[in-house]
Amino acid sequence: MRSMLRPLRAAAPVRAVAAILLFIVLAALMDHARGEPTDSVGEAIYRHGVLGSGKQLDAIRAAGVHLAGKDAACVNCHRRSGFGSKEGFISIPPITGRYLFHPRASSAEDLDLPYVESMRADRDPFTDATLARAIRDGLDSEGKPLNYLMPHFALSDADMTALVGYLKSLNQRKSPGVTDTVLHFATIITPDADPVKAQGMLDVLKQYFADKNTFPIGATPRLRTSRKMMFMVNRLWQLHVWRLTGPAETWQGQLERHFAKEPVLAVVSGLGGKNWAPVHEFCERQAVPCLFPNVEAPPANADRDFYSLYFSKGVALEAELIANSILRQGSGKAAKRVEQIYRAGDSGEAGAQVLAASLERHGVKVRSQVIAANAPGQEGVAKAVRQSSGADALVLWLRPSDIAALGEAPPAPSAVFVSGLMGGLERSPLPPSWRSRAQLAYTFDLPDRRRVPVDYALGWFRIRQIPVVAEQVQVDTYLACGLLAETLKHMADTFVPDYLVERVEDMIDRRIITGYYPHLTLAQGQRFASKGGYVVHFSEPQGTRLIADGGWVVP
Image 1 (cartoon, rainbow, N blue to C red):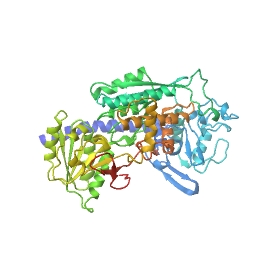
Image 2: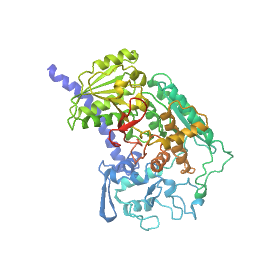
Image 3: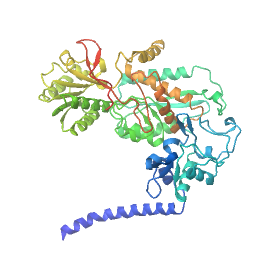
Image 4: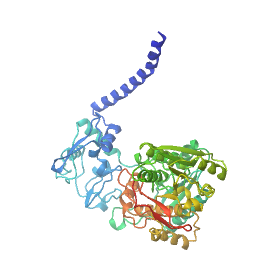
């Protein structure tokens, strides 16, 4: 009897939860059946191509092309902000309520609307009925055919009501950190960030903001929609430095308090240690764009989110490059056993996890040796290296101070990989016996190829007497500032957080000066602008010259 009662007791909470879920679903379906607009249904149709019934959205485009589900979602063309986009030479118009229902105007300059490049003034305003006709039949507010890119959607009346309601809700509220004369930005520094790099980053940021504010700023009338004024973003830039303290569990609260006291349009650059996830989560929750923070280990699932953009995946990308190299070596005969060493509490732990997962999928056994955070360098590192004997490959996720303490290299393993990002790149202090055998994971363009774009930033530092104490971090910070400045120029006075992220996505691949990276690009949904790297080795016993062991690899 006792054995029969236990499952019944365990099942009771399950039934209770199931009943609650059923009630929620039924309530939603009842709302939907009554035709009442719900943000969740309209948003699901717009962003994900999912109807209120849970079925896929269906649409037919010109020439009978069938679209379904996510491929049919409005967000693909009209974007998350609803402000539209450009598809080649075709302008995709904004479809937020303000733009759809505004009265006819003789020109864009007569509209009392924030300027968006693809907006139209000379047409009749939509009504709910003509908007539904546009969505179903591809006819504009005057009954004329819309562009062939506009699909014809199959929507029930209830789904249509929900979608139209959602488009009306896209009317943006006043953006935080934006006044008639000032744009407010923040940069965030976590307590485990390297203090030298933090100072180098701040030197660049403060000087860049000072330069932006050099030109006289007066009281500025609100920008209208004239193309002539499009590039006149005549506002001061103000930087707020948010330094976090204490354990990571307290950062969310600190960030909320900073944001309440100093609302900002976006976070620019920033510096983290091992854990950037709380900052990433804050920006997602508050809808604050976070543009290219200096972090070695971005959150693993950052690609699923929207507001944070990174230059690269950092140590995770290095791990993928190393795994790719290990699996390729030996004429296709993968190594059977790999050892890796990292310090507890450092960014190498994230790289080690990705490497282990990547190799173990191919049957390669990976063992990790963790050096205590406070263990003396020489003793802890030497012990870990001794214990790696017999492995086919050794991977070091170590800082320069630990690398310098490696001592003499053991005869085995013969293959040694080093995290370039953590180990100091081409200035890694590898002892001579290691240097001849080590291969670096290198997520940047090679030094001789990036000389010109990096010299551009270094020249700017030199003229402004900014000490170069962490070159890669400072050049990345300068690049982040440049991308922000160029993006804002093309936003005129439409300072909306979602639109800011979309404009960065649209223009980043046009950037000529890309600093350490050979190329930057961000398709919709991508959050890492540089996607590949090299595996390299030193060409000489001394110096910083590197030779790539193959081409640029995108794992």
